[in-house]
Image (cartoon, rainbow, N blue to C red; front, side):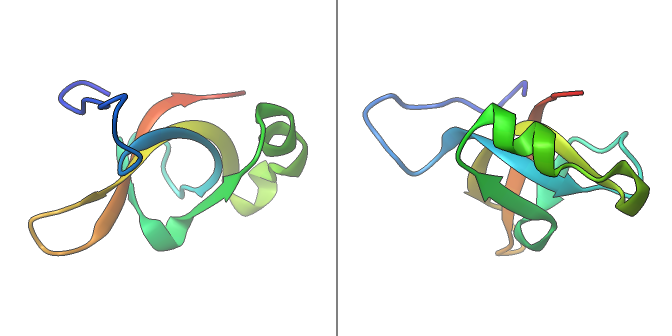
Length: 79
């Protein structure tokens, strides 16, 4: 994601595999309650459910927004 940098010395913001609930896949950031972190890329792909609008992704986060929400930023969709 452009504008989001990862500090290799810190564990605050990291790249992670996830399942993302996304009614529209055009968005680039998602609130924490729409993201389920999983251990591996394979797990994300296996547990995806497009019929329920749950897609596998690699995300960066969490990051705190100016409104105080914890957000994850889309790095890429895995499907």
